[in-house]
Image (cartoon, rainbow, N blue to C red; front, side, top):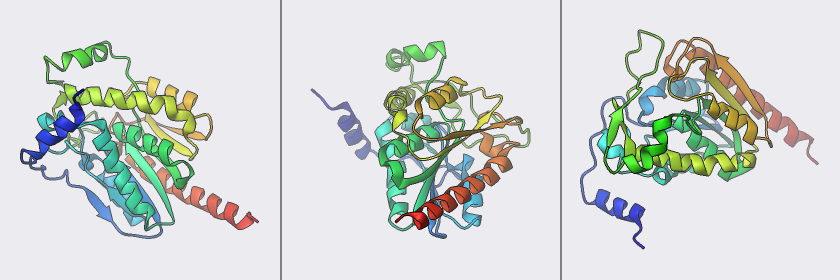
Length: 276
């Protein structure tokens, strides 16, 4: 049997990597002993997460915001990458932070939330906590059912991009088309993450927009139902759409994530001090 993932990887190595557009570059900051790996979402780029990452850096944390393969370039490029490559990028950022920080947290928007959830499932108690903004675990869209077949005929579709309520923000720095082949990779990722939600042990803070035109409430329902071996705190965002990290409620996310990290670290320190 032919390993299609390996074949796709070999094909990529034979052609030059597309240029990364301005603003989509990864972000890195070396700060204190608390690390945070931050992940952007599907068809997005570090652009949508950079203000949050910079706020975390200004709060004294060591921060890594990688660019996922196939993102920040072209939608055609995105179609040539797999969910395993996206996850490996987040995992590598985590491992680098784990090697230099006392405790590491993970934060993600949309598919970035899916990827960081997978990280939390894999590393268990090694992760200090998980911070999610409109995480994606499934969809009820009817046409999504046909994506695994449609990808052979249709390579892209019109996207619901830059779902932002604030009129002063015109773009999230993502693609104007949805790469269909890549979307089927996201579906494969969902199938890995959702059954393993009971493996989550790190505390979870989820920010969720009241109005989200990209991710339906089903995803939050799946998280609450599946993450039964940890705590999931939910904060509703009344004045933002899907890309809430750039929207009216962004400061709620920025300040709330710092409060969550500080209180979680304080709790870990107290527990360690009381341990025999």
